Structures are given as C-alpha cells and as structure tokens.
Figure (cartoon, helix red, strand yellow):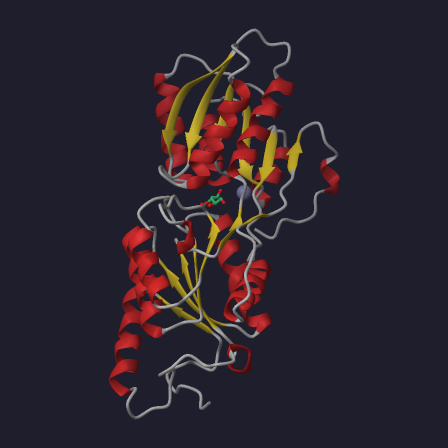
Length: 337
Ligand code: GZL
Ligand code: ZN
C-alpha cells in the first residue's frame, strides 16, 4: 500500500497534542486525494503497525528513560510510533487517545497518570476495535474488557521492600518516626507504594508515619517539602520517598541545614536512577529500590501480538531489585538513567 505522504519516513513522530491534531486535520483534509490509512491494513506486519503512545510527561529521569525505551524499541521493531507527551495533564492523554482512535492506529498504549476516569475514552477505543495496552501505571475500571493487558511496575512490592529494609535497619530502635514523600496523588504507583509500605509496618507498633505529603515525583517539590518538614516536624528517624527525584531535592534541603542524610536520618528511595545509586555509595541514602523503566521492548512485543489479533497476559510485572547499604554496591551496573 502506498505510504501516506503525511506519515514521516522516520517511524518516530514526535509531537505535542496540539501539533498532532493539526497534522491529523491536514491529513483528513487531503485524505480524498492522497493514499493514506483510509482503512486498516489487513496484514499490519506487512506495513509496520502503528502504535499510538500517550506518555504522561518528563517529570523525572525515570520517565525520560521510559520514553526513550519505548521510542528505541519502536525503531528496532519496525513499529511506527505516534508519541504524544501529555505534559502531566490527564485531559491531554484523553485527547491523545481520541486522536489515535481518529487516526485508526493499530494499538494504543498509554501510561495513565492517575488510576481513574478512563472508562469513557477506552469505551470509544473498544468501539473502534483498537486494542489498548496499559503500561507502567494501572487503571481502576468498571469494565476489565476495556483494555487487553498491563505491563509495568509492582508498586505494592516496592512499598513492602521499603518497609522490610526499615525493619532490618531499625531492629534495635525503640521508636521510628517516618516522613513520607508521596508521589502523584491518585496514581496507582504512589498509592500502591504507600499501601505495601503500611501493609508490612502495621504489625510493628514502634514504626509510625508522622508526615505524608505529595511531592508529585518532582525534585523541586521534594526540596520544598523537606524544607517545610524541617521547620515544622519535631524529630524523625527515617524518610520514605516514593521516587529518587523527590529524594534528591530532599537531600539538598537536609544538607543546607547541616543534617547528614543517610546518617542522621535514614532514607529509603524508589526508582534506582544513577544519582540515587551514587548517593547510596556515598552513604547519603540507605536503600534504593529499583523501579524498572526499560519496558519498551516488552511493550512492542505485546503490541505486535495485539495487532496480529493474538491475546496477551492480563498482568505482567517487570523484574525489579533492591539495593541496600548492606550489599556489595560495586556490582551495580551503570543505570543509564
Ligand atoms: C513508576 C513511575 C513513577 C516513577 C517516577 O512506575 O510511574 O513515575 O517512580 C515517575 O520517577 O515520575
Ligand atoms: Zn516499579
């Protein structure tokens, strides 16, 4: 089938929602005279399937690595990727999914910035016969048939691992007051980390969370929260931070006040970006829990299956490790994010 002149020869189409909608409207304006995707190809593998990918934004090193993993995997697997950056706005993701439907992509993949509120737009995708792959973060839905499967993080286990480290670290302490830097409110990963953390600590009375506030996974908010906490909270023995970005901001605030992170206060953080591993090696944090952003190849493999009409597993959790001050840190490979 003749290539659609509007489809860039480069399989990656970078765009923000507004630009993409403009491209789409031009496409539809000329579709009568230009060969294009006026109907879905019978054998997608011949033409290279088109995957619409709605990413939430670029709020952390983790997210940027996740985006690069998806883009590179698309290149390597001959998938034409329409990548839309929602700039942290759920409404942009809904617009993106609607534009993917209008363009009749073969598969839609998206990272739901928060868990709820997706049923209507996913119903539209289902009505258009386009399979949906949920990645990284999970959705709450009243109709499980609205998506084909999930691949991403087991955030409850990450929260449990954080608590298990504190149990080990503070096994002889009488009291452990914990400050929690919460991720994006309403996101499955922040809620899951918090749930798993509390699930383990609920049986150990000496542990208590004395402060919990969302820093939205942002380094700048981590700094602001820690600055505020240090001026308001009497004393605390540990920080549980839902991502390294917020942790790095908190480290700055602690050091500005002469507090030695990793020594005067124990710090557990999640993602395992290079800067956090470096802080672990420097003794400035005590435990780094990996959250694996490199899901691009798995996402493409699942998308190709869906485009070929095959079923995929409903739930796939990626492999994730835990790095602590008790381990041999010299063996940790470069993180690449
Ligand atoms: C986790 C992912 C989170 C990371 C943050 O799977 O959704 O979002 O922990 C990122 O760094 O912003
Ligand atoms: Zn994870």
